[in-house]
Image (cartoon, rainbow, N blue to C red):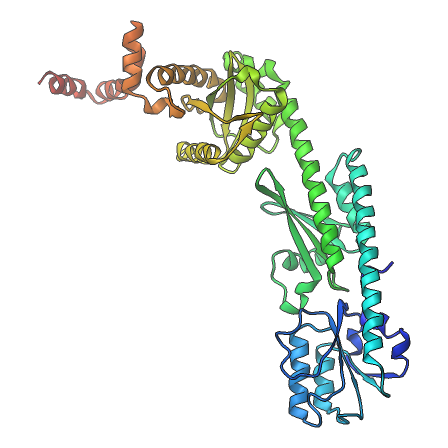
Length: 473
């Protein structure tokens, strides 16, 4: 079955046996969605587009200017074609109207004898309704076949090939920000012709030759799927098929990300050694290159997450939570590896952007996570987050892990509410914690005063003496 009914299809019906196509021959492929009998002069707000207009010519009679205005309005309203009787109420067909219709590929069809408009509309409406019913049946069949394919496919290109072969139009997918794939593949020249369609830079009269729908994954637009055609308009049926395909593609990508997240969860040995400081920089870089080849890290840090009743969550619940968190933090320039350790979720964050604003971006990501209505299993997400010291060399991630653990201890002692803290912001709390533990303070003192001591040594200055006098006053 044809995916749409055109003007040319209707001209094969029995009530169009005695006609003449006087203009717009190149527009006979226009799609017809409905048929109207119309004898008014102001029609711009009465049409939705793609209507076949039947008229007696009474509206304009012998008024050439009024006739021209009616044709202009039909063209602007994206009507499919105009059919009217010649001779009963009008006998004129000025050349300027023929020229206007030819310019816009708008068919004008003359009935050479009186025809029963009621029977024409009944015939065409019956045809259109039966066609709609058949499209619904075809749509359901397409969906069933697509769902079966989802059980076996291993690459999203198989889904794109399926829709391309079914609709016989050009298919494209844009993975943000600029990765474009075409099915079937196109050469460089045709690619340059199609990209303006994708970037929404086409003239208005070509806008019906493109349709798109976003591929959403956990609230984030991962890609955009396009149908493109230079030979026909995109129909409502095409758009329904496009929506079903987009849903299937989102399910496939979600499944793919889920199994990737599950695989990451199984790779705990290396991550534990990394946290213990037992991995070299080369080994770490090899691990990152294998598991996340697109990542170019610029340092990193550890974030500890304490969830209420962690033991009550299933692996599926925790995997979903990590996948959701990954979607958010990737938007803010981070990726992470995660393991469960000592009743906590441990995240090793890698920074993929500037180190100057990492804390600001991390804060924005955490706030977005907290503002969501995320539930893990039957529980609303409640948390305590502790972010360790930022390290430039990833082999030192163990130091960040230790400082994150210290941050969590201080946080637990001084705050019982849901919160998050950065190790670098604790300052006085760290001093109090050290005093309470009766531990050696040299390390923390050196962290704050070492730059001053080194300056005194290098320039023979006396800044330390100045500080001692200042605090003795």
